[in-house]
Length: 430
Ligand code: S3P
Image 1 (cartoon, rainbow, N blue to C red):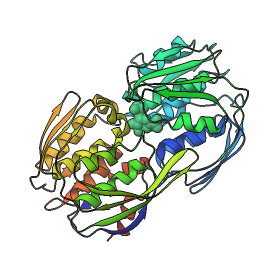
Image 2 (cartoon, rainbow, N blue to C red):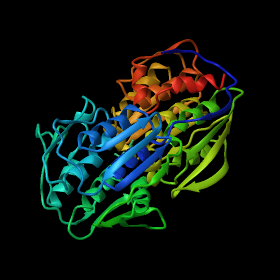
Image 3 (spheres, rainbow, N blue to C red):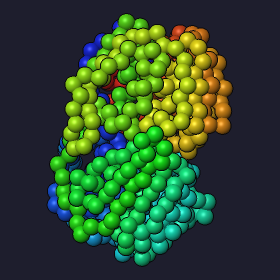
């Protein structure tokens, strides 16, 4: 995809359904009894991989665009897959489905693409093993492909070294099949969609977190059944992030992004935009299915640098590439720290972000847990090496809108992982 600078993005847009929530609807619906009806499901490659896996586990899932019906067969209704479960590029599918599969009376294998098969899985293998699960890395390198055979699960209390919703959710799902209580304490609260949604499905789940934001614990006890639900998936704030950034940095813009999930465990970006001097406001705030939703209004602003670090990081981890782009445009220095998790995303995002910002002429220095960006110098068009990372492709598409000359986003098709139709949304704003 080739892009060049523009001005005057104006209008209303809505972004596709939330990726984290879409995955969970399919998974929880599959192990619940009865029908789960999902509206505004994200038809991105990652969530389609989750559908593919649960169909391979014997679940009937009907999909008509963003309307999906899951014919759940109850907690013990999955059947043995006849082939390796293909999770594609999706870390969420891999880690959450592993928790469910360790509780099943049959063998399974999970594998994905090259990026997925190089991401760390020891973070789930170790605690699941402590719970009595039989799960191993087939190549003994701590990564997928994974092999799971039946085990006898018992609850544990696990203190996770990282605030990871995927690790937490994996263990809570295994906990549905374990004897006694399973609880997970994390250093600060990661996204809590699993806790909110499992409760709606009827699970016996509790969560608590310290008022100062440090330490959060979620615990679950096995229940007899979960029950199918009707769910309307809010727009994904991680996808809205690109239009928020575009609205703030493209001259003469005013964009209203409608129906965006603003769960506080996901919306750290809003605070960072405010800290950078962005003109951003929430309109029409409401709550549906336990999730907060709002329309987000942004107008062109002159941004200044800030520091992004500490407990806010898990609530904006996927938005850091586009925050870095805003920081490159902002006056002054932005420090991003405490974000070493960036190294184990679809790519090493400390490297992919800093390499591509440098290619555009930005003064940026990678650090062990983030980066330091000296913003304000004009960006120049460049060839962006996405390394097939959807968030790098989208973040640098926004940088291209304010860069001098042409920017080429290589392998931009990878955007389909989380946002098919990303470039079409811009058409509404021209
Ligand atoms: C996700 C959790 C986060 C996030 C990912 C989706 C989820 O990963 O980066 O895109 O849906 O649970 P970690 O749990 O590894 O932080």
